[in-house]
Length: 283
View (cartoon, rainbow, N blue to C red):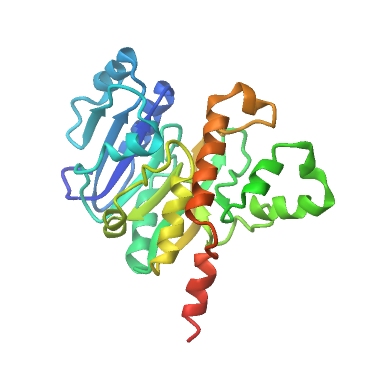
């Protein structure tokens, strides 16, 4: 990066995966680009030992800014703590467990965004630590399917295919393609779009803000694209994983349901903005 002007600002929200976060940033520092990168590392753990380890490792790096939230502010407010610290043309939202092992990933992604100004959000292929492909692409959600997939009813013939489609299990993950929405564990956002919508919508606490952002992109006449020309690697441990009875044991699961309800209330009666975008292009 060698003092070059930052073109991409990478926002990493750190919670409890400190070892993985340090590995994450070290991989990013090895990226080979013809432009500069700025890393905004937001500590959302509320843990002094975690914060100190981040400072010890990266406090002297001139292209890394460490911000400390006094407590866990949730995903949206925690990430938005980086507002005002952005530089360049793009904002890259990256979970703390994601590893950029391919040294040309950032260059490929930025080049593709540069050549396709109609794209607001783009995400690379994600590979879990066990070698499986992360299902990082989703259809715009239907609450009854989100609930059903966590119960025994997911295997009923009337629901099975709908749930599989909602989870994009039919998707060819080897092809570049438009998609409804991408999980924000790893995606790049055009900065002018990011600023127009004000970053992540703080109406949500932990989940659905990425869904909301992609919905707004399609609604505003941009595209959302899955880009498997480069791969990143993540641990595959989802905060919202679990079945029906985990709802009663897991705060994160209950928060997922609450944020999903908020999303449905906000978008009740609205159609799929991606379908409306395509129709608008046919006239």
